[in-house]
Structure formats: structure tokens, C-alpha cells
Length: 121
Length: 109
Image (cartoon, rainbow over all chains, first blue to last red):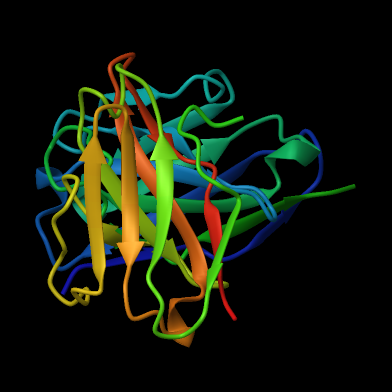
């Protein structure tokens, strides 16, 4: 069965960087796009963008350009989200979510368990 | 402020039918499919409805989706206590962006 397993919670200081991993199993990694979704404490879901797992080409939603980087290591079926120059407002749970095609759609039948990133001095 | 507008809360008693609305525009709901997600407390979202009104295997037929123009609705019939959760609509926007609604917290009284 499809599984997306994310790395554990992170506590970082403002200005630091963090890299969240999402390891996929149970399907051909390069056949389906990977999306990233943010959920701030007590808030709703926010689409951050997606990465084409076939070409490695990332697309970022408005508000997630500059400090956010999506990347892949297809040899280990893993997608990464790196956030640099962390700010307190980056405190959130970050989810990876598998699409049903190689390109982006809002249809995500499989999600990681979420990674809590806390930014605090 | 989300581009897809949902009521912040909804409620019902066990056995009742509840509907949750999602309002958008011609560039998102009006021209693309709508999806619904259920998020139980402390867990990742779960796909409930895809392509306006299709249920993934395993989702009870108590859940149904519909779309008309630039609005969509999720209906839950035979409400159960385990349906208490946050519900989100989602759609693609022609500006090349994925969108989620602000979410609706469903309380089973």
C-alpha cells in the first residue's frame, strides 16, 4: 500500500534552516506529482506548490517563493522541503501529499503524517 | 481570507443531514473539479470526494458532493459522532494555483 513517511518534528531558531523529508513507498515514485501543504496552528490548509517527480521541476504558490525549495532524491523515493531564514510565522505542520497524475491536481489520496516545524528563540 | 469560502462552523444531531457549502468563482470552481477533505483532530486530511461527486473506495455513501456553477456542497446524511471533524473543499484555479477553502468545523451535538 502507498505510504508517505515524513521526518520528525523540528525546533529551530529564527534565521535557521530546516529540511523536511517525505519518503514514499508502495508505488512508482516518479509517476505521480508530489505536493506540499502547510497548516499553521489552529488554521486551515494552504497549498504551497508541487514538484514534478519525473522532471524535478518545482512550482511554488504565491507566498512560497524565495525561502522555500522543493527537491527530490529519486534513488530513495524521497521528496524534500527546505525552508531557509525561518521566521516565527513559519511555525506550522507541513504535509506532503501525492497527486494522482504526473502533473498537479488538487486530488490527494495519500498524505504524509505531517511534520511540525516550530520556530522560536 | 481564502478564495474558496466555507462557513466556519456547522452542526447537527446524530442521524440528521448536514450540508457544507463552498463558494468560489469562474476561475476555480466554475471551471474545474471540486474536492473535499475530512481532517479528524490531530491527523492528516483524508480525501472524501473527488471530481465533484465521486467517492474513493472506503468512503461511506453517507457522504456526497455536488457542484453548481461557482459553488459546491458536501452533504453528510445519517450523521454520526465520528463525523465530527474539519472539512475542506479544494479546487484548481486557472491562475495555476491550488486552492483550499478556509475549512468548516462540524460539531455533532
